[in-house]
Image (cartoon, rainbow over all chains, first blue to last red; front, side, top):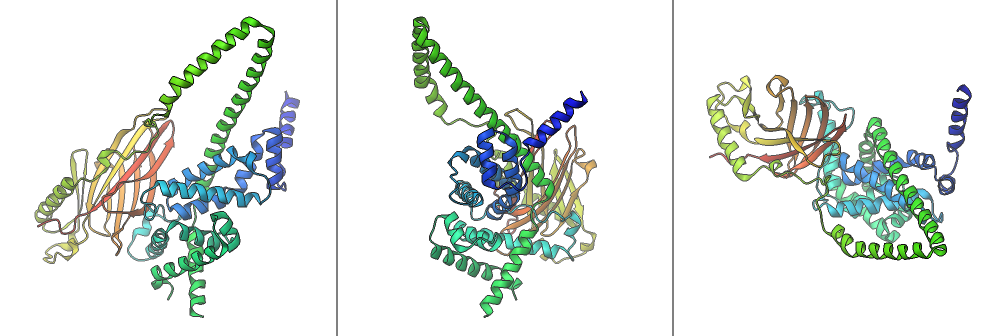
Length: 201
Length: 272
């Protein structure tokens, strides 16, 4: 009995992907073995940036969860189509942005739908008129400002300024020219500076 | 140069906002949810493989057996009939049991808004303009008074009255039908913190705060606590457009699912 459990434990260890494995290795191993553990590892690596990206685009926590789930299911269904010519993260971001744009298109009020929760550390005591409420107001104003940007401009500022993609990478994800991406980032910045002028003084 | 400085300030502001991201707990729950979906996906893939194997085996046997071959032809005919008659039925639009349609009662109708305005005017008169908020739930009316307004003749505080409708629906997991669990309409002043205490709301608890932005959007922060066999608590903050209901929370816990809709309407200028 004891030896069985040891065997099971060692099997689990063997089946668990090595942390240093590249994304490509994990995908290859999943394709070979069909073990979901390799996908879980990929998910763990990329969930936070993708979830952040989605929330920064849709500005709604519940919707961000739903869309993120949809993205990873699409990735798994389409993983055979990943040829390894680009980085997995670039491919993933591209699927993510396509899914987000589809979602936003489906929402008629995509430009201004519903900006969800304020910072997690916020509590109801923050509702006192003086004090941290100012921070909450600023957060709300930033979300309102982002919501006012058209989806391509929002995508540009999110990809380049918040996720650190180069203009060329962001252009590849958004399927536009690099020059267009430069213009979008510039225009998004201009509009945001206008909308948030009082906080930039 | 100034533009560069502004860019840096803007980036810093955006970074600060982005760093306030979601809680780890939320992320862990989402990961569990996705893994669970992946496992289901894998199960389907395995089933597909099994059916391919079975088809291969059938073909092998058919080659050896004339009777089986006739049976296979019959099967194919049946499949074609199925494709002809059943699949078009699938193609028809059907309402998904999980479709997130906004229930009609989540909308604040024009007539209801007008009635609230009239009621508000009457109650304010009754309470000598000290009314801070009022809430309607389960055919009861609750009031919150602000004694600091005693004797005030200035009605400037009345500007910015808002009504918020909160709808909580519940269903058992696996059930297609959502049922109304709790509904509440609150009328409050702009920036008024409203708390409807548990003893007055069947053990449910609601805290609400509204704030009108200069551009007409309405920021609402709310904390719901639902009592009962499957209690749940949620806190949301967000922006609303006038009268448009928004699903603000979806929770699945202990075999029950909840969803909360919220809609807001401005009462300004409606009372004559």
